[in-house]
Amino acid sequence: MDELFEAPPEETPVKPPDPGEPLAARMRPRSLSEVAGQQHILGEGKLLRRAIEADRFTSLIFYGPPGTGKTTLAWVVASSTGSRFEALNGVESNVAEIRAKIEQARTYTKLRNQSTVLFIDEIHRFNKAQQDVLLPHLERGTVRFIGATTHNPYFYVNSPLVSRSQIFQLEPLSSDDILLLLQRALSDPERGFGSMDIEADENALHHLAEKADGDARKALTALELAILTTPGGEGRIHLDLAVAEESIQHKAIVYDSDGDQHYDTISAFIKSIRGSDPDAALYWMAKMLHAGEDPRFIARRLVISASEDIGLADSNALRIALAAQQAFEFLGMPEGRIPLAHATVYLATAPKSNSAYAALGAAMQDVEENRTLSVPEHLRTSFRKKLAEASGADQAAMQYLYSHDYEGNFTPQAYLPEGRRYYEPTENGLEKRIKERLDFWRSQFDPPTK
Image 1 (cartoon, helix red, strand yellow):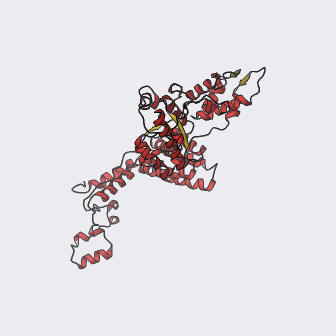
Image 2: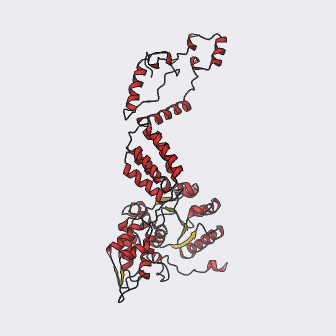
Image 3: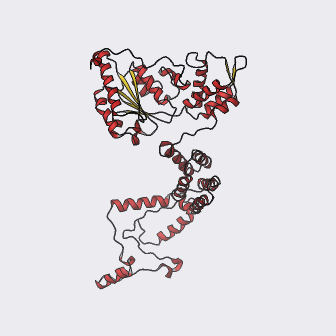
């Protein structure tokens, strides 16, 4: 217990770079001005920047793809506010470690009046009990909590913790942002390679920045590999395009099978089909296939879109989508992607109508919210009509008119007691002919239906 009342040693959240650390760790920004990208939350006048500069924040959650700087930003927040920085990992840490860090934070607050930023990476990996341990200490302000996750916190982090935190989404870095980081690493003599004689071709750096796909860590790791494995002639290291291509190799698509990237990409795919843009639809499908998405999932979405978005404007779209699904099952990959592309282009370039889908929605809402209608007597089964006859029901009301007995296979007859209307055809594609027929049939009712 005595150590709790002794003055703890001075700590600084940003330590001098360790030459043994990877380049990506050594090049972490030391201030807000060094943070690349994220201007939507860190630009001048933005909420997060104002909160950091005014030292007025309590709990934050950063979420976004790997390599976007979540850990780095937490470090910078601690440094900018003069706070201690303590880190835990949602995969490795337990309740005892959380309580130990909180007790340390309480000691520093008491003896040095210094706040502590408790950073928990992969906070979504903590179970409910572990997350609940934090809640009372967040309420009392014992620690300043920063969580990081690659998953949407509104779905993967407990609601009480989310409600006590401000949520900020980090976006993948642009190629220009990553290029700036690479150039900084080459010129920094303390943390990077500024003390070495390196000639880096512009096209080589651009290649690393492009292939990193928004991941700063991936780009810096590839740069470090290129520099440290390239022999230097006369003491000079030449980083050309061939070396850069070998260092970063295959482009890794940021994509998760059950998270934001999965749902955002399929959403973009369907909306591109609905918006009649075959090029965009093919790109999003290519991204999903490259990232390892199940092609059957794509096929199912095509079948849905064929009825939801094209519908009666071109009923052949549903046949094409179903044929693509069956062809994929027959062919497998990689050839199975060809009929999926066939269906995608057909659906994207087909005339569009959601009238059948919208009509069903209106009818469903009517059933759920309003009085349920009884089946008219003339539409009931023969058995039900015999029961009605035995009870002395109106014979005229029970008379069903067989459509095929009349000219054009149609005769005006009520099929809903109140003549409600849900389906309104468009004039797009083949549905224009349906509209013409339906307008004629509806005009035969006197008075017209609602």
